[in-house]
Length: 269
Length: 344
Image (cartoon, rainbow over all chains, first blue to last red; front, side, top):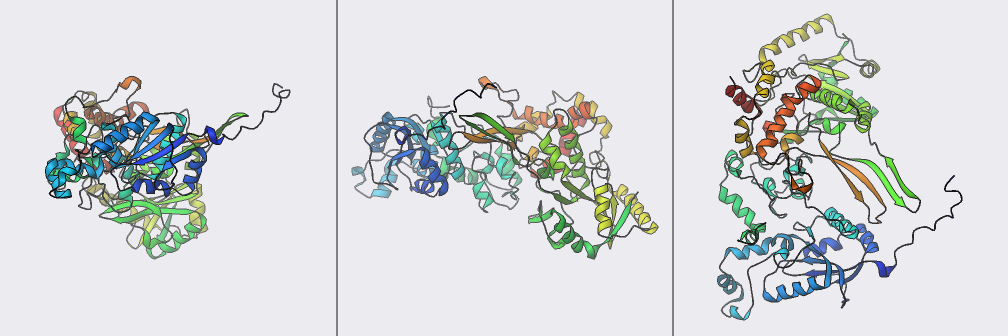
């Protein structure tokens, strides 16, 4: 009996509050809906709060923190010089950076700004005195600083938030699924949107949301970004259902215009 | 041959009685000519005439997502507990193509190492087949692979005789059920009517591709370097629809998920697809089937070549689902015809 003589081990100690990772949430150009998703986590949020120590979270608490962060969550895209500098300063103080939400991960709807000439769009938004207001082409967070974890989606999908948090706590990499949304949609036995005569971006969009929108009767808008090796012959899909290629491209640009920043020479994957 | 009779107007009572004993699932219309197996409690919910469901009944044998293990690590050490989740369920209205699919999976999961989750669940499933006397649509190729006629693999099997069904009883469980419900035995006239229905069916169901099934192994033996795969690969979206809906595809992925306490967790298996780019990718980013053409070729070989060597049967049941579900118009019948034309 090996174990009989051993003194009974004390039960594992609950981690001290001080040992919990210091976590902060920051937002840039966004609707702040992804922060809302975090606060909407309900009981899961209480579990998460048991494992982390939130030191800054504008939408939920008023405290500020002046030391380094173990983990920062960044929401929103980067659309002016000030934001770019602020993001770099946050990155310098953070051990781990998590980009969450479509704006942060792919540039999101803010990327549509890049479809226009910058000065034209500035004038349209700010009027004749637009030069007083700083503005740059929209960038996703990884196009400015190094990102350790991505939680894609508009808004972020609750089960995935939890998965990424657990991976970050364990120091393990998280891989965003790189298959089309169809791969999950089919398992949910949804009637294919194309069968209903509606163009859906599922065939080209990264899975991981459990086909959230289609489960609820909507199409996929491509908010999780394009799969890294999309089908080159989308033409077959498009012609089978009598669609125009421009329609698909325009739909895709709604969330994915900033992808072009990655494809510029020297910045490609 | 033990045959019983159920009058059509008695189906509702049959389903209701059955639903009192166990969960009953059957094809249900989802609109746009799509159907899915789902729980029913009365006959009027059931689509008796249906095009093969989006997912085949394999989802009851191997759930899309399944917890297979719970584990915890604490001061006492590491403990683990296997998990097998099942529910007594009757699957009503299974076509012969899907019965053939279940037979294929039974063989695969009975191989050593045996899959106890699958086999345990199988023991709690009661299968009621339903015969097609005409084609569901133009994508089916069940006559090619001889799965248009019942070939066992069910507890009860229903064939339409106009105002009634003749029910073939194939197992003790099936006999207990029909005897318990007091369903009358079929008369000699009923058996004659069944013979007639089958004879008529043989006139309707004919080889759908004009190439004999026995020639397929020879065609596939020469097809590894066929140009047909390039055409198929160029169209493929890699969405995995074709394998997810296939009644004989069974590949899965396993993943451990740890709770927020970072001590306890569970292992889950989820359906996987050889059409995904990640499927054959290994450490160092080497990918054994990097091209879509290679992945599609693999799928076809997994239906018409490899299982022949291993199990002496095709793993295509002719249900037509892969063709129906493909957004890029990859068509099983057309692909087979093209391959045959190339090597004739």
